[in-house]
Image (cartoon, rainbow, N blue to C red; front, side):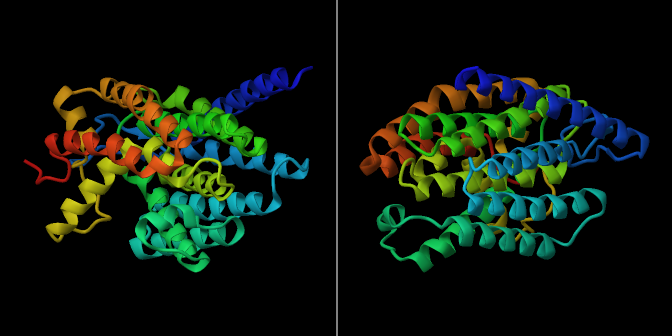
Length: 342
């Protein structure tokens, strides 16, 4: 069997296992009344099982352990993904079951990010220079902050059916493709495809109308894993961190602008709300599906070409970030992201 055929079989098997595991988690959630009950800040109207992200965590962690045991994946990267990822998933699971104070959650996220930066590395000097910064210590601090924000990013943006899972699949597949095109570590590309396959198995259940939600256990884990991939790939000076910012552009811009406007009004950043642009659009259209599809189209037709150009021309990567994200920011603000709830 050729390597390509083995890859296809492996991806197909991973999708199936994640689909199977998600179904099991769903049945368990229904039996134990682990339901997300709609409230005034929810974007759904039907009680829905939650915690489906456990399937993503379990299957992807098994993939990483398998790759490391076979010598395919660097041990340091495996330790960062498994150790940090499980910590983020565990605190997310506890928060799904009973509210965990924001300070504790954020402390765990910082600890997981610190572990990853220690094992993998932080933001490179190449990316820091545009900010007038340099040095491993500075890069490490920035890396911890970037990874902590990525972890929370998916948590904030996981508010309608299918949006977080489809976003993760796009970033993982696009990142794997760009890494492969530019001669990056093949094991990292395969690992990213494994994350995409695992998430696809879950998305089958989560596609609008969702039959299960991923919960904080899944959203935080996805954000952490994708951020870790970004640091690991950029450390090899193959695909810079700016490219990853472009790929995550919709989530990055919507979450950041929404948070900034809420903080400017003195609101608590960790409290639930429906003020993101995608939530306002879902409310306006009275449906989740068209919003999720719109984000997918923006990713493929707008952000992916800019990410490709940035990867091909690293000297102009920051200009590509501006060109790709500023128009999204204008649209997000036009939709009322972070504005007062009417």
